[in-house]
Every structure is written in structure tokens, then in C-alpha cells.
Image 1 (cartoon, rainbow, N blue to C red):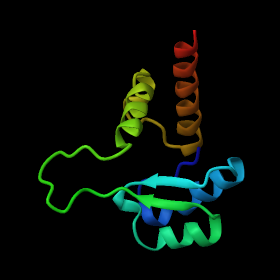
Image 2 (cartoon, one colour):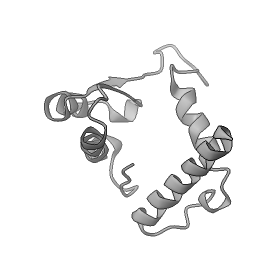
Image 3 (cartoon, rainbow, N blue to C red):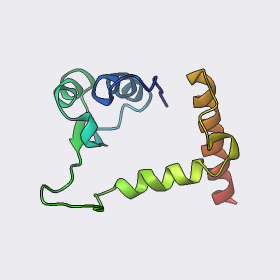
Image 4 (cartoon, helix red, strand yellow):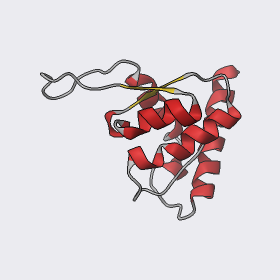
Length: 115
């Protein structure tokens, strides 16, 4: 997992997690991303990280809510993690602490589902 500050644009901050994930999970070949990651990041990911970045976009004629492919998986995971009271609000000022708490919350969720 890799976090960065909120004042960094998605398309600029996407390089750090893609590089970190390539080192830790070299078998990942395709990443689904939101429209905020569109632009030069897809070319950079293919060239430098050797990952195909697939941008999931809303339909051009869509108005209001639209279910996007595989988007529900991310939203469901966030819902599971945010069941932990500490993560409901952004109290943390150091990203390493927030990253650790998210890892603990995700591990606790996996353990509950495994039993």
C-alpha cells in the first residue's frame, strides 16, 4: 500500500503506487483506474512500470449515478475498512500511521471473514 498527501493530483501521484506495486507484486499486469488517472500516466505506466492502466470512464450520455465496471469492488472494500471507528475521520497527520491503520483494518476484516 502506498499513500500520498491529498494536495497531489491523482495523475501525478499515481506513479508512486504503481512503482511500489510493481516491486511488491511483479505478476500484476493490468490496473483498473478512475478517470482522474487519465492522461500521461497510462503511457508512463506502460513504459516504466510495464503495467497496462485501464481507465474506467462514465458513459458520455450518463446523467446522475451510473454503475461502472468493477468500481463496486473498491467501494465495498472502503466500506469494510471504514467500519473501524478510528478510520471514519481523517485524524492522522502522518501518512505512515494512516497506512498502518488501514493495513490493520484490512487484516482484521480478512480474519473475521476467514473464521
